[in-house]
Image 1 (cartoon, rainbow, N blue to C red):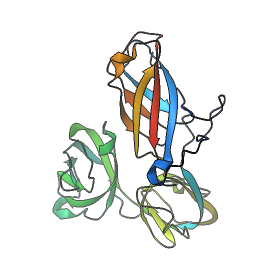
Image 2: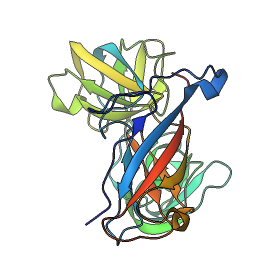
Image 3: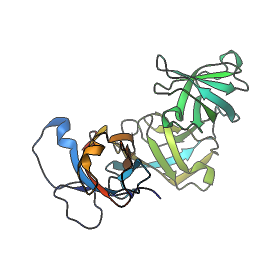
Image 4: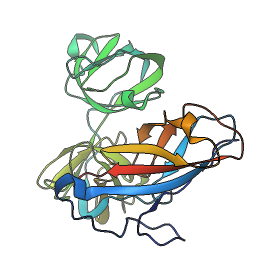
Length: 281
């Protein structure tokens, strides 16, 4: 079992089917004008102190989606075999030291390549990062947020350049984009933007094949992840006083996860109010 996964409702929003946004103007200026107030009821299972709350329905986001035309893609470059990682150190000076079997990495051979890191249990240790140093046993990546952990992971380099995207000013490094419409399936998918130019976008596609296809598109949902969320317990059938320690552990584009200070009793409820601070749209 697990705690239920509620969808937030918003002040001024009609009850019923999930919808994006709230319908009231508080006349705040600047960043405070982009604050949403969401309400939800968590039904406890009596054994779990954590769970997820959706902003809308677990699929929709508050972000702005742009769709750009793509003319062609070149074959992937800077590719390496998948490297086995065993641990990562906490970031220092904006970089993180990953340890493992770094085949071909001696004498800084991988400097400048972009690596896709997967497999670590802490999300901050995974992602797409540029190598700033390498040896046969270590890979130093420009990850400013790494958390130390010993765990099996993997890293593989490789990028592909998609042309006639006109991404400069519309797409930013670090954005997650969806590319579709190419005949070769390896050219389609969800990727992370490495760099964006005036007529091209480079992403971490490890297996792209050269192809020209004017029917292809790139879509990017920007400003979908809130910059911060504050959550308070406001009531429910479970005594609220035991849950003053509710915290937000992870924020995504579709919702957030929380941790309660206790598990409570199965079937009882906690009412929460969430202040959601959005970036500029």
